[in-house]
Image (tube, rainbow, N blue to C red; front, side, top):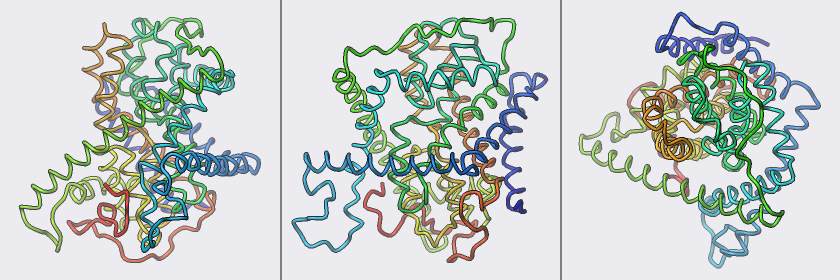
Length: 456
């Protein structure tokens, strides 16, 4: 049933598109057909995936597969690290079961395993067929040329820099609009390895978490294309047809070679994620220490998270979130932008079930599921500088705008999901919960959960 809270989410749809139109390089060339088509496609995909019994069962199967993958990964971690992996048999008396969840041993190893499996599936051509299928879909439905369509599809599964590798030889000849679109879509989506990691973090607080995370990354791709085309309109006089043939394909000598190289690629990602989290969390802790010298407000010290909660609370409300949850949700949006989505997911996973309602948690899963953050700006500049060094200056001039497009794309996706009836996701709307934050400088439970062993 369509309710007022669903209509509220339409404010977020209009806001995301309106901001990009206001900042467009050519407001007169607004892509009306693409705007309507992209939003309709997103809505239809959500309705189909969660409304049709067959597809809904398939998504539930994804959740079971993620659980099995996580359990299998833990077996390998336990073999190497023993009781540090959080096994039931601990050599000491356990007073806090939550302390067994250690991010370095429970989440990061999943990335290693998924990267190895992805390489194996690519070698077997299974993942390649899926990627090319999505590429053809983007080409036919959104008017993309072959190579950018393939890179967009690959980005959904492989990551923001890994996806464009498949069309590396085409990158120098892409139009400015197409290059901007690839960067923006990369920040609007996440990679397959991180999808599983996010689902692992949320599985205890969000039913069917794997299905929501997978859906979020897929349907954020058309949102990223749309907002990128609004900000930097396509150039039909330059974008002529080119064949759908990736010139830089990944080749493995054998299945074992695929597993070994995939593990190596995963290790690089794990180290990058861990190092980024350590540095950015440390920097925010330094800022919080300085802000703490200013004294407390509302009975608690001022912090980056509390400030972000107030700044982004109106945006969170526009996504369809009730105002009582808006400061907490706004803080999560700010943390995602400043500290990376990994930290935001960890903090949302630490929020007790009676603090924010399930609808808020579902909407925020879609809003957080993207690489649009300050760290990704550096990742994209470094990656594209290697892939297409002759356009580095051009990329430097558009990467911050692409981050904004990616951030708003996930907000657009969350708004479309918020406009869907709550019953579609198997939960009832508007339930009465424990008191939460008001939109003031009050302590933020998302910033300081009581028992969070992985809380940065």
